[in-house]
Length: 500
Image (tube, rainbow, N blue to C red; front, side, top):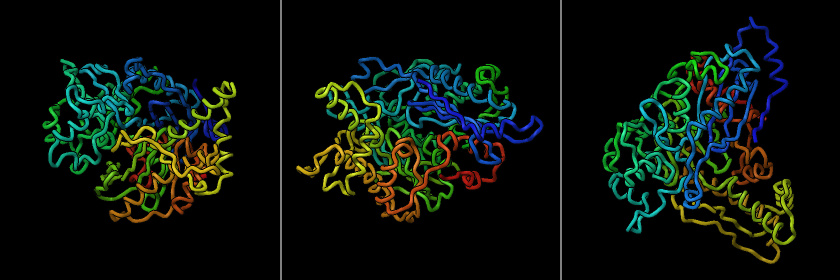
């Protein structure tokens, strides 16, 4: 199903401007494994004048792969879907007004690309579990073997612990399986491949994406050649790292025809979706913490210099600074688990086929339960964590009075909020300055006012929601405007963020 939405009032206002006027638009494209989002940003006013969402239906994981927890996608099909989504937007405003294109998307995962810029492998997504499998004949997983081979100092300068679904891990698995292509190939991220198809250049990447590979030194901001050699990988298979926001080329004639934009429109090097979402959500980075909850979730804090915090990623940001990111696999996915459980009870015991309003009922019941859920506590780690994939969820403290649907729902939401509070506390313990407010982004927050309230109460901070949706695409458009010289720096670009 494709969802299309437009900001009608703003759109009429902007597109009614005569052809001779000078307002400029920047396109932001966010290609994820759930959906593809495209926006047009009027940088003068900071408003989204048009937007389009499309479901990403390019997954090709077969039944055997699904049974093993694999996640594989057709990269070319993802590009085709993105081009179609892009074509829906410029038809509403003159294409020549689009002065630049910013690209972001899933910052973990990997696709191998040939010299003629075509995929040699499926895109292996961030949810792929193949590297948690044991190496044949051993009781160690591929991730554990990577850690052993890395030795000392291991992954200390990578900003993150190696995890299944990361580029470095997937390359290591392919190498161990003797499954790397015999011909020359470059490993890149999905948004990098999209930018390559737009421009005919590359693949190239930036430090915000490279830092999500597990084999990139985020301190020196270079591929970690020593670590790569110890893992038995090849540095010449990795993409060139360019400056974030830099134009890598213009739209090719073919891409222009497919998208309805003008040939030669500048395309910026793709960036990580976490960093793009931070830029598109946080107006004042020094005193704000961002909590983004979609399928999973992250809490992100900006710091001016590199800092290591146990259990937290240190990710490159756009201006040589960093984001501390506590990534949790709990979020909308965890809430879905409980939703599906309630649906199964309805089917099995009462013959209910489906209930589209079930989330609303869950929230209503949970809102009637007092904070603390009368002692019921949920640990919502149904699919583990990055550091402990084998961890599983629990409810504890059940009694006759709190074993209800409302209590279970509120306890799960409180568990999600508590997970991010623990990560925030770990950052503070390492000397990070306390923040004054929260910004909440992602559909799980936008569509669940109760979760927003619980987050605010848990952190004892006010929480603000960006006025615009599609925060990552918004951030990518801001970065494109910066790359085209519309702003002096990242902080000036971030001032266009407005809140409800």
